Amino acid sequence: MTNALPDTVTTRQAIIDACRWMNSSGINQGTSGNISVRTGDRGDDMLITPSGVPYADLEPDMLVRMPIDSAPTGNEPLKPSSEWRFHQGLLRSRPDMAAVVHAHPAYASALAINRQTIPACHYMIAAFGGYDVPLAGYHLFGSVELSDEVNRVMQDRHGCLMANHGAIVVGESLDKALWRLEELENIAKVYCLSKQVGDPVILSNAEMDDVISAFANYGPVKV
Image (cartoon, rainbow, N blue to C red; front, side):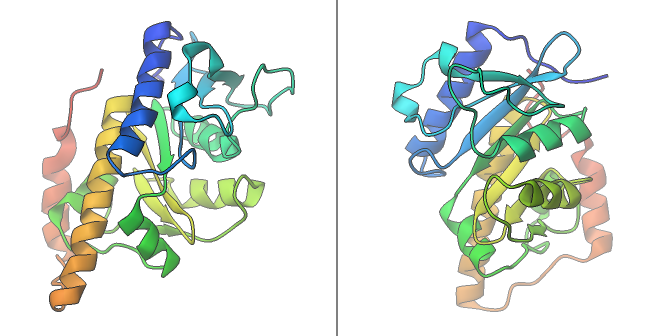
């Protein structure tokens, strides 16, 4: 059973509002981020933000609808985000997820530039499905290689850093994906700060197992 949102003006506007929120909150800058959601009667299409359009100028009919199992035809009114490949790959391989959100948050990107993962410095790491927030290796933006790497790292996770790039999260709903992105940047920030004032104490796998179990129903409800 796939999580899919209806292709309506309401859904499209929610994506636009999410893009604008990312920039107003400081989680993203310019048009460097992108968002997709699963849609279609069988959940086999996606809506994705177009390439290079300022968020302030986005209108619902500018979002690009395309299949999750084939490349753009070239006949779309606007080109999809240059990162459509990893959006497509994640929605295809994760039928339990309805949304993919990518951005360049400052603290998460700083750790990604240093090629660092985020260890279990805080129990909220459990929101991302494991004992850390992993790091996807570097590949050219928009490339097949980057898509393959992101999909490899995210097989059983809800978020990752991207080397010399940014961060990406998935969500059972768009709201939950945005919640995870905000949590990821906050954890990245407090981890960076904790390293400045001392040596962070990392939770054990056993301690994280307890948290992960308790996280089964944590976070905003699916909408």
